[in-house]
Image (tube, rainbow, N blue to C red; front, side, top):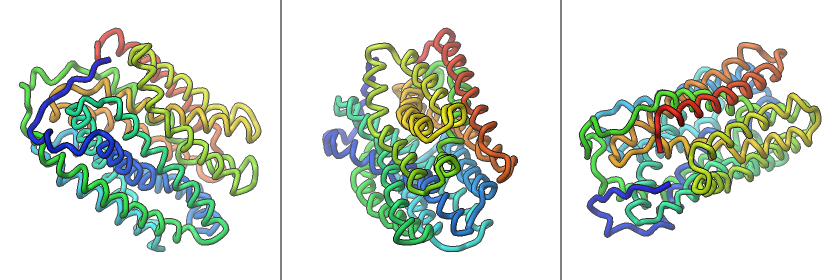
Amino acid sequence: MRLLSPSFSGVQRSPGPLPIAVAGLLALLLAMGIGRFGFTALLPQMRDEGLLDVASGGLLAASNYLGYLAGALWAAFSRRADAAHRLLAGLLVSVVTTLAMGLELGFLWWCGVRFLSGVASAAVYVYATGIVLRSLAACQAAGWSGLHYMGVGGGIVLSALLARHMMVAGSALEGWRWLGLLAALGAVAVAVVLLPLARSAPALGEPAVPAESAGPPMGWLAAAYGLAGFGYIVNATFLPLMLRAQDGTASAALDGWLVVGVAALPATLFWVRLSFRWGVYPALISATLIQAVGVALPVLVSGVPAAMAGAALLGATFMGIAGLSQWLARVPDPWATARRIGLITACYGVGQVAGPLLVALRGPAGGFALPVLAASAALLCSALLLEVSRRREHLG
């Protein structure tokens, strides 16, 4: 696949591909790896300390994903969006809401905090990704985009290691406060590099090409991506609790989440490189089918080894699916690209809300088997819809 390289004023002042990609990595680390998935790492300890149970944890997760959906829609349908202002707001809200989870505010206030955190995560994801991909394209350095997507896996690894430490040397609330401080440091570095680049790009409210040239329709891709959101989110939210139920130890639960993060670190780069050889659709369909197996493993095969293998397959695929799907959605015009990425991210968000709600509705005694198998089935359907998209939409 070949990356189109839009030009815009200010390219001459580009800091170079490495700082841009590292700033993108840090943006995803703080907004997604910490702001979203820090909850997964600290959920077992929050339950052990009596702050939450499985049902309330599911509702908190759904609140966060509902906020992510709202943020994605906000990005998708904004007509005159200032990318720099929105990225800065997203960074600030991500830091503040992570710190706020370290206060014993009560369940309803926490729901509000997690909702705002989701809005901020979507804003940072959409606008930071748009800035990074356009800037790397202008530098003729599209291959560096794999480093940008490593931020999610890096944040998962960081949150898992910190949660392990809190199990023996602190509380879950203290863990949230530490994550908030680390996010603040990352936010400063992101702002220094990406905000000037955002201000030098064309305003997202000023399309650079006519509306009719904004790219082919992508309804089948959007539907497939929505199913992928449901397909990964149950395990991505509750895997440590699932492992805790099998093994009975907190360390094994967090080891599984650490495996997800380590596997996620090189995953996007691997799938992007594979797409150069196979094509985007074959690589994306393969990742989706592998993830369906990984999601189902913890309930189809008993024992910690199977759950760990499922964790590795989950980590190795979920960001690759995101990166390749967003690649298919892109067009040369930056405004249209942000809108299209926002649209498919909104579909992804709908799927993400449904997963934790299903767990919450079943309650603490309902178990995870049914939601996990439903998620795996959704991924199989997603792969089928991707094949329909390949045949009918001619994206990429």
